[in-house]
Image (cartoon, rainbow, N blue to C red; front, side):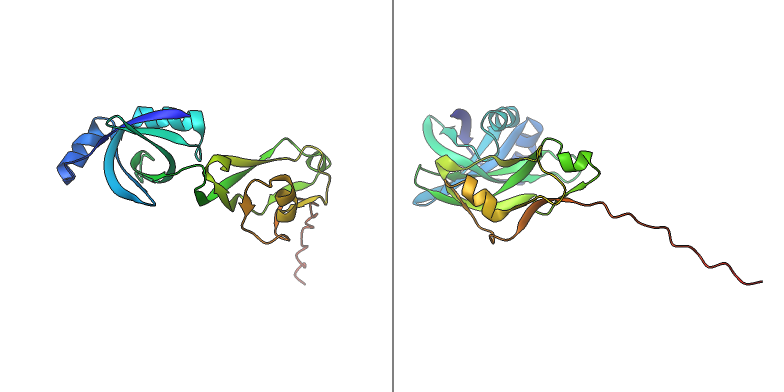
Length: 194
């Protein structure tokens, strides 16, 4: 588990926020069940390092002025033009805390079907899941290497593979399909009669 150092933020004025961001710090809040919401700030470089280490849904040991709490990155806001993170929400968790979140579906490999002229149609790029904090995956990977044209992976298939969390989608929903490529015939324009 990675540790992220934070400090309590007591000055909540706009001018202090602007100064904080210009110095490479990000304002944040920590909240959770039976926990008073606390305003804090963290260093941007430290946040980037920790996310690389534990992933988007990983558990982080957040050290606020010497007091550690287990948290996950619940939400964040980006600056529209630059994409820089400008605010972060942390949710305090324990091993029994169940969390509803979204995880990315990542396809690995090049399918046999694509090599034969088919195309990959990924219907779901994210899945809504419910999991205990310790069981949260950063993403769900599907190896498509052996998929032939016509092969479909449905939510039910993923539910069989991933039993340590709940996927909140209908069983019959398609996640990815290797489709046939339809030959589009050029429409012949009728010649004008002279």
